Length: 389
Image (cartoon, rainbow, N blue to C red; front, side, top):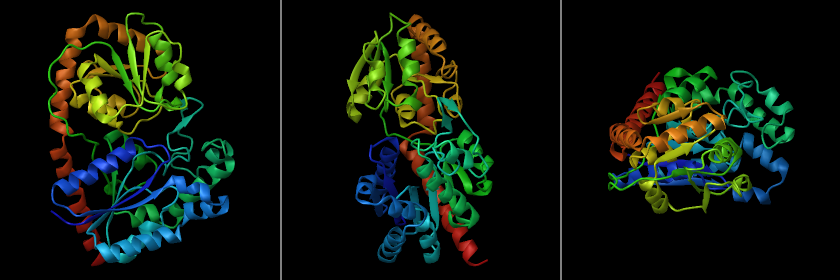
């Protein structure tokens, strides 16, 4: 299959793992002979819009629908792969694609279709109050950016498009990043027959064996990533040092914590070098991570992961086999796992080797390409069947 693919993505103001996934998948397709074009929007342009205009475009963006129609007419893609429409592209692009008869594949990077805040997180705890119902609680509580108005716009978008059939009839296939997330979206009302699983990937050669020491955290320093849990746990383990690669609003939480080495933002090569020499990656998230790219990067670097026993992380990290799991939000339990890792470096090395084997079996570029193109073929066949029904 070498069909043309139109990739659609609304980038956030702060670049994150989702943007990296989009770039990686586009490169993967191009390297294997596909023609790929991107229809993009960037949230930096929000500053030039009135609140009323932005609210309207969040629900239905005529400019985005027109741009997609123009791109389809000019580029003639066999499939449209959407990553994020919020807020500037809007679900109007699904309808524009349907009018052109082009199948749409949508990757579900977060829980925006089920939760106005997109993370099922409230006051530092998992909250599923809006799952499978009209998300009025998220509006009343102002779950999105502590704003009832903005939360209301999001809730209206999700509920309105649920009512007019956008999610059920205008998206040919959804990609969930793991089985846990797939089931959550089905519980939230998406049609099970349209939701398939394809994980994230990286293209990493086997790392050169070298001595490993210390712990590593890689990611945005934000509340949902469990930065306070990390800080509290590290302070309890005098023998363990944690190198922290990243920036964000919770950076001050780590200041002055004994054992924390703040590295700031690092490029991909520098992160990979750190992963190849660390004892374990720590993932202390307190929300339902979908599939953090740092996790598959760690596995590619033969680096075991110490992660929260929460949501998909409990599925992706096999306790005692590819890493260690601890009670989410519990710094004492995390500290205990860190101490165990320091006392058992040989066992951690075995877990790292198993993680690398798991990566080679499940998360390589070649395997991901096969999965992605199979989903495209399935979507194209389903669209043709619907057209002749």
